[in-house]
Length: 403
Image 1 (spheres, rainbow, N blue to C red):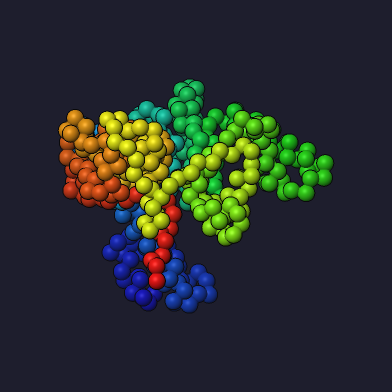
Image 2: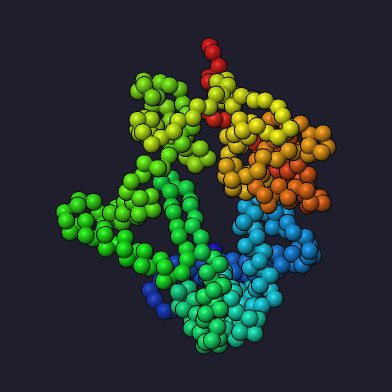
């Protein structure tokens, strides 16, 4: 698109681009590219505002329905937790922070700043939230950090006596999170009161620096990590048992080949790690039998309540809650009868799957339908008619067919 074309198109949407071609030694193509980026950024903000309004509108239309986030999540392919957060934030922007939403729609602020306004004002009353919003949006800072800092200053200005109440509200957000990364790495995060976490960090940092001064060759970051793990788990870890589910041929343990194992529900383990764990006296090995042609675990008994072996089997097959998008590990889920036992549902692998408590209750709500046409397949239909299929995962790669 030429520079002239950008100038012609821009006024129909947001007015003339802020980038002035005459300000510097730029070619028309370079200037038009920057102008297009400015317009795209504003378009994105306007679309975010549209999404917020639609989410809030649907939430209002479904007022009183408990599982709105699951309905939205299944329609938009969002995890239920993410959908719930977006719906709550949308409702707040529409009802408590309308000026912020309007600024987003005009492209004056981006989605990150709108989210910051929501987060900073969340513990406030509606009246105080409106005062903060008005103060921040007058000459709103261009950059995210400055925007959030200004919002924080206004919170203290309009509600100086509410600091303790806000602190107590924030304490409810304290949590520990775990996120799997690539290549055998992971992220463990702790969120909570600064007066508790900062001393913990200082203690870890001081210990790491002391080791460094004593000549330890590890980097400070590595020393902090190793120190933290020692503090979390204790220097004497003989009480900690690592359960390793053996899903590899015995040839890996013998060193004949390097087929990987698996840390249940988390990640694959390189063959060398598997062998190290096998030699570790703290490890507890559990063997899983599976059908080599398909890689799937074999069936076990049938009683009214799933016996331990059957429940274990179900959790190992699916690994996660079978509600679409839910990431709750199966080890923290209930074993659910797809067709209720009261309705003559069988207690067998063909009628059992792991569901977290929230989604076990969700499937009983009007409009939700869950089917299990075969043991390794669970189909969920939402009240909106969206269909999602969750399949059990093989515990190992199927054997290649014989020649």
